[in-house]
Amino acid sequence: MANVSLVTTFILMGLPHASALDTPLFGIFLVIYVLTVVGNLLILLVISVDSHLHTPMYYFLTNLSFIDMWFSTVTVPKMLMTFISTGGRTISFRSCVAQLYSFHFLGSTECFLYTIMSYDRYLAICYPLRYTSMMSGRTCVLLAASTWLSGSLHSAIQTTLTFRLPYCGPNQIQHYFCDAPPILKLACADTSAIEMVIFVSIGVVASGCFLLIALSYVSIVCSILKIRTSEGRHRAFQTCASHCIVVLCFFVPCVFIYLRPGSKNAVDGVVAVFYTVLTPLLNPVVYTLRNKEVKKALLKLKDKVPYSSSK
Image (cartoon, rainbow, N blue to C red; front, side, top):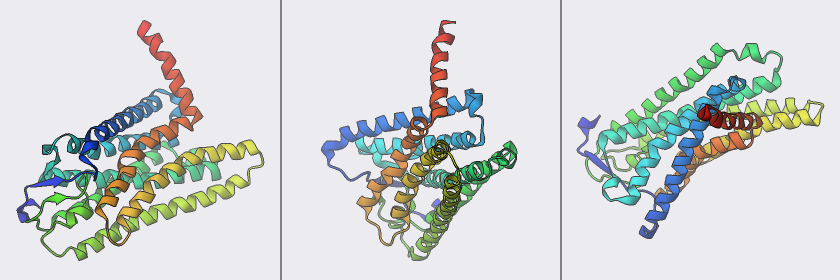
């Protein structure tokens, strides 16, 4: 891909902001990144050591935490470098290709995973007696593997289409990471056809996943309303509320950036912060603060630490 391009390095212009805000923004995003990594690692640890959490829902949650940890790592460290030095803004052509592929790979895998998680909740609430047999360990592994495979194929399409064009002139990317829309603006060729293909590709995946999630939750709500006890209805709604929150925080910014006509560089960069920086942090917060089982497991883990250290 690089042999059709004269550009060897790109310059990431970063988030639009006053230079006086470099240090404060660096500190804020560094804290968010550390909390994101630690929070998701903690969820992975708690689920792995607590046998009560070895269920399909938490199996998919471990996949989500793993994705979020790396999804944030793909973009945030490089963004932090744009705050502290001019040299930190440069990124090689190959590194840019790798970043774009990794970003869309993890992002689209997360999109598919949210769909699988909504299907899991649908089976658990609508078919409680058959749930264990329908969502067996083998089925969980196959469903999770399908999300990773689909994400890698979808990302390969985006990356190939973006970097098959020649890049021979301007190299300043109006963003804080390598993404298809701002990179295509630098191509030395007509990009309209490729932009349309990418638009349709992302649109089909995003709208398809969101439609399936919406259908799952329509069925879930209908089943919840049939539950006779208010406590049962409350528990069912509580189980699904966390998933709904993170789904909306992920899909709304993505739709705004990729599925609307025209593009405002400054606005896109700010909106992208929501699903590249804040959503990966939101997941461990939502799934721990709103989940009694995870909170109990965290307390057990906390009680074990001083015991094991004194022993």
